[in-house]
Structures are given as structure tokens and as C-alpha cells.
Amino acid sequence: QSALTQPASVSGSPGQSITISCTGTSSDVGGYNYVSWYQQHPGKAPKLMIYEVSNRPSGVSNRFSGSKSGNTASLTISGLQAEDEADYYCSSYTSSSTHVVFGGGTKLTVL
Amino acid sequence: EVQLVESGGGLVQPGGSLRLSCAASGFTFSSYAMHWVRQAPGKGLEYVSAISSNGGSTYYANSVKGRFTISRDNSKNTLYLQMGSLRAEDMAVYYCARGQVGANFDYWGQGTLVTVSS
Image (cartoon, rainbow over all chains, first blue to last red):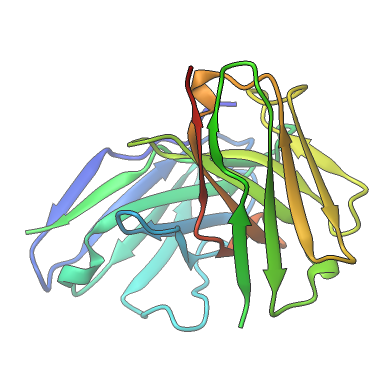
């Protein structure tokens, strides 16, 4: 099963907004509203930031938002802060036998 | 507080076997599907395997199918991953994660490192 496609890196200055894209197919991102986003700081476990395309778990800042159009999902972080610098991964339910596929990850740099 | 604690990682020779464990606490373990996700050094996340809440259904990535076996003991609140015929490309940090509807993982363990080398 192929990984979802994410940009390798994005960057932004404190206070700005950035968007990370996650492109799949009609068998995963486009076919289900089951896209999730995870934040991972170096040496740490991933943390769920967005689930079911646009829902935030309790405790996650409302600066994080998710959306989807067709086969592409997006994570937007507004009011960038230094602590947002991390790797971000998308995932989706898929009709393939494994039921889950991840994106390749995007490194966010806060300038 | 939900906690997932992996153990069992270590150094193993190519072709060898290893069993990982994930001890769960702070929630009703038997009510949730559980998953294993791995991350090779410097690489992204890779989905490995899943097991339904009662253990009746299991899923595997093609890369591990036939070599790895996922299981659980709901009486011990523990998830397992039996790994066999290990290859260099299996070297990674292995995370266990709690699954929610929609295939998202709301809690993760700290990970356990598996090193495959002679």
C-alpha cells in the first residue's frame, strides 16, 4: 500500500499560518472522513492533533484545524509558535487490507 | 490516566525472533482495538498491525505478513507482537497505540527499540 503524499518540509515565522497537505486516493483520503493528523517532537511518541478530518481532541489548541477536499486533506496551524516545530504525519483509513495508511511526514520549521 | 508501556525490544540477529509487549492501564483494555506502528531511524511512521478488541480479527502490513503475529490477553491488559524471521529493515522503534473508530490512535506508548544486526 502506498503512503499518502505530504511535502517534506514547510516553514513559517512566529504568528504566521501554515498549511500542510496530505494527498491520497479515492480508496483512502477521498473515500472516507477518517483522516487524522499527528505531531511528533524529536525522540517523542506521536500525539493525535486532529481526527475525522477536522475534530480536535480535548486539550489540543484551537490553532490547529483540519479540512479535506477531494483526495487531499490539509492541516492548518495558525499563530505559529516555537513549540509547534515538529514533524507532522497524516493518516487515513483505507479500503486496503491493512485499513490504515500514513503519510511520509512533514518537518515544520518555525523560523 | 491512560498509559501504554512497551517492553521487549533489544538487539537480535537477522533471522531471529523477538516478542514485544505493551502493558495498558487507565482504561478498559478489552473495549478497544489496539495497534502497532513502527518508525525506522530517521524515517516516518509505518503501520504494522492491528487487533480487534476481542482478538477475533487481526490485520498486517504486507511487509510483515507471515512473519509477525499480533495477539492480546485481555485478562492481563497486555498487547503482544511476536516477530520472526527478522530483517535489517525491521529495525525500528515500535509503538503500541490505542485505536478509535475511524482508525485514529488517541494514545501512544513511549516505544521500544528493535535492533536487527549481526
